[in-house]
Length: 353
Image 1 (tube, rainbow, N blue to C red):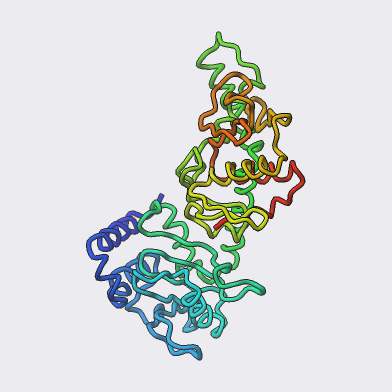
Image 2 (image 1 turned 60 degrees about the horizontal axis):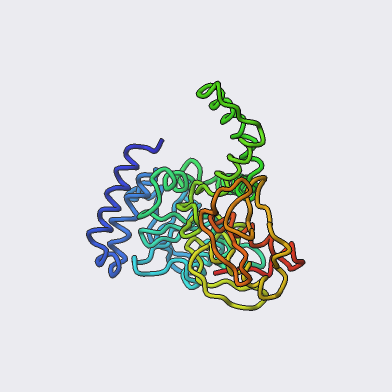
């Protein structure tokens, strides 16, 4: 559960942004005083206490808006921009990283009052955008998610950020394993569903494979936490790799072996990959069906799965084959790359932005 006082501060800030967006788009000082400082206070930093927060501290690289200090030593710099600024822009990230790296602090925070970014001050052979640890959107994310991230910055935890960031990275990797290989989820949920069915419908007979197949289908199409879709049309969750995970909005362009293709939805990446393979005369009718689960087809001669269920979001390919694209964002990418591998193309030849 989130702290009630944090939730209250968050709701006030959201309402301020809603009512006074134009002010905050033009006035950085208003962003600092009315949006940033209340949140800093809500996570334990007192902007009025010089032993905790020092505004415009003089450094060799300039004057960051806030230095959060511990025993009079800066532990985290917070740089603020007006609400109109894109705080993911190279210019602002580089500015923050100069402050942090110059003073020997491993991380820094950049915000426009609505979007907050935690970034590493330095990482060899990476661009500034690739050093982003996390982003939190005050306007759209649920309070629990916002609190979980911002609480990493409270006075008790900020000195342990290295450990907190590493734990988060490990959990993200483990979660990616669950997202990209549904076997783990199926193994966990199938016994629970079998027990529920046995208790609720003792006279019905369900064999294990039948239940496993059903769970696998649901897992493939369900919107995982952080996603808002089941059909690949809209998604804001995690992607496959660290660099790709920076792309939070649906893609606008995919690149396949150097060819750029305009797309609007995550499901378009799967559709365009399959279409490209048809055009290369690789994906042909003799390959049908292509299985995506025990009882589900990714590609088939007709838009039905093995047990006769209709495709939930069928797309017909140029050669007449049918493609099922009713998958979560991660599953769309997974299936697209698996299709490339099937025909001996490098999955890494598929990228998007």
